[in-house]
Amino acid sequence: MPQGMPGALATDATATMTELRSVSVVLPCLNEVESVALCVHEAREALTAAGLPHEVVVVDNGSTDGSAAAAEQAGARVVHEEEPGYGSALLTGFAAANGDVVVMADSDFTYDFGKLPLLVEPVLRGEADLVVGGRLDAATRGTMPLLHRVVGTPLLTFLVARACGRRLVRDSQSGYRAFRRDCLRSLGLRSRGMELASEMLIRAARAGLRVREVPTGYRARIGSSKLAAVRDGWRHLSLITLLAPDLLLIGPGLAALAIGIVFSVLAFTSRHGIEVGSLRWQPVFFSGIATILGVQATLAGGVLAHRSSLAAGAAQRRFSFIDSASFAGRCAVVGLALVLAGLLIDGVLFARWVRGSDAAPVDHLGYTSLAQSLIVVGSTLAVFGVIQRHLRSAPNVDDQAGAP
Image 1 (cartoon, rainbow, N blue to C red):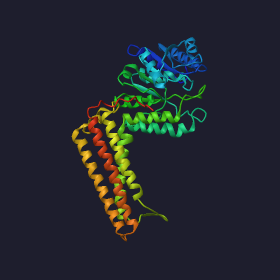
Image 2 (tube, one colour):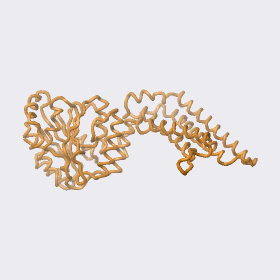
Image 3 (cartoon, helix red, strand yellow):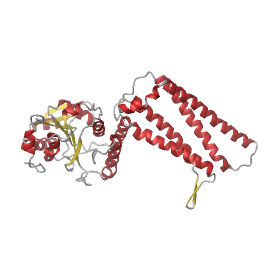
Image 4 (cartoon, one colour):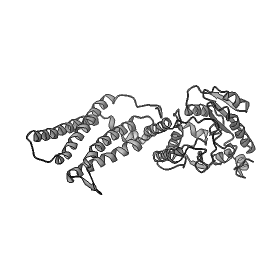
């Protein structure tokens, strides 16, 4: 019995064989000749010891070092995916898998395949639909870069939790997972890169699937890492933005707009600035920036929430007013009115300057900032209204998830 396997698992697994009979382990592979055979052997041994019918599917994603042959000699069934990408390889592997329970992992030996029985147990028992193998308790400087461990993974886990509406797991970026194959079909996964990990959790939460996390350890990889932190992090953020525009655009946009308005008021009530210790800070210098960015982010989020085919149905319905001709018309009219108001304020200030008004320059800061904000925000609304009228009949945005 492999280390970490629950004592009653063989009996429980046998009892549930009438419902869940077999396990497929899917391993994406790109030039992992040094480790892929080890992964295949360890996975097969663990599942054989647990008495679970199984197969190991290795998805070759363009290897040139003999990885496919090594995996096949180790007893894996090898399929090929020409489109590069972690998600592309996994989706091909999921489609090729025959097992009732599908396990996804990596071919670099970082995941302990001796823990496979522990990972699939909640699914076999009918206690969970998706189980994630947690890495963080076992992660060290030698197995996971410090920046990934203390910044990247926690930040993405936080954003995924917000997009899900609650925190499902501590380690949202673990690629060691087991799930019911029939549940997977309903998720409609589409990501072609590393962001598939985030998409799976967000869609699972929206579908009401039962998600659990079990500690499965984490080992030092064999070979070089395929992870590109900046590129893959950007793909995760892009995916989360498309799936949950309210998280990264609408919410922060409304907050920035509110801050901009408050600071604009402070600019008039505290014309000489606000004392911060021995310094004097002028809120007027940030009020216009916050207002403009807030309006732009809110508009962009509303469009994505309604028109992106990846957004939740509730969000699409909530922002359906964006497609109405009346909303586009009101944006254009209000935008033009704001532009005219800003130009009027600028005209008055210019006339006072020409007449040689003795007003202190600081007294004009609030009005100057207000005029600039009105002109930029008004222009944004007017252009948005005009463009939106032309987009009303266009099909929904159907971007690939996480496209760079």
